[in-house]
Amino acid sequence: MSGIAVLILSACLPAHSMAQQNNPQKFALVIGNSNYERVGVLKNPENDANDMAAVLQELGFTVEKVLDGDLDQMKNAVDRFKNQLRNSGNAHGFFYYAGHGVQSGGVNYLLPVNVNIPGENYLEERAISVQVIMDGLDAAGNELNIVVLDACRDNPFASRSRSAAGSRGLALVNSPRGSIVMYATSAGEVADDGEGRNGLFTSHLLKNLQVPELSVQEKFARTGQDVTTYTNRKQHPEISIKYFVPVYFVPVSLQDTQTITTVTQAATPPKSQTELLERLEDQLIALSSRAFALRNSIEQLQENLAREGLGLRSDIVTADMQIKDNLRPNLDRAAVALSNRDVEETRKYMDRIRRDLEPLEKFLGRR
Image (tube, rainbow, N blue to C red; front, side):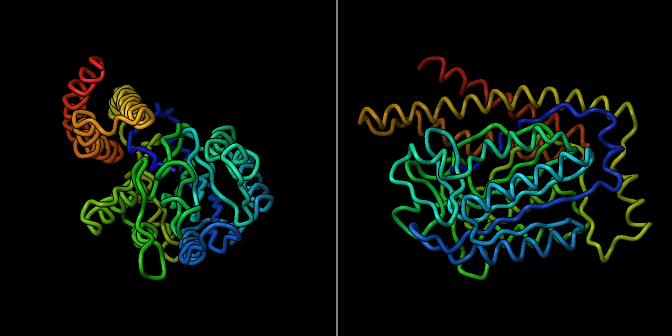
């Protein structure tokens, strides 16, 4: 699975959605697959799932946890999760998966522990498509869905790591409106499994989820920064944001009237500012779509060259590095600035995004 790109595929947010954040129902599905029967056993996903479920319960979620799920157990759990969200329009959903992931033909799959895949053409019927999950969450029509995939590991059919049958990492996929999606590492790259109780990415996410004064968007941004710093930029988590209203998950132990009132007031900007933020969201949608198309085009170029046995071209490698080192971080920063309702910072980073996009698009236009 490729880490889903931080290409911030933003969405226009209806004005009433801010009010709907008040006292939403919160449902979570947490899956941790460690003890695979035919591919490499993983040491951390069971611990990751247990610890994530405990933290989400403390944050007020009704949690269903699946450990070492087979295909039927995973499918049934996903169906129950979608039904919970569908029956509550203002609900917040949180889907977390730790285990093996596979990319095939640009489609990402989550592997059940009883998976038996003689060839890639069996994946659709013997694994769980990430895009099918995304589409189901979109169809549920609830307020917000958060998806976290710690499955960006190397080929599970060749080693004890967590990802891909044919390609390294996961592929970029389209996220539904009203969603925040985070991947343990970048598109097409692999993640460090960690040496402690939890996977490297999940250990940092668990820590940041428990900081009550941060919005969810800030928690995820801080997690990405922590992982990038800890690994000396070898692992770069990615985020897709299509929900820009600040969301706060306050621990049950801290949920008193004063805390909730303060958070609600802080999350409701004046109407004129709301309109301005919505215009910025529209602009960020367009920039994000351009960036998404750009990354896909470069990946396709690289795949075509590899298929023809021509190897990597230095100009294409340089363009890819510019996306990773310049464009993607500025997309991250623009998303965080917008979620914080900081108009000037958002505009600053959007200007940088435009500056980075133009020469890359010209480069591809000459190919």
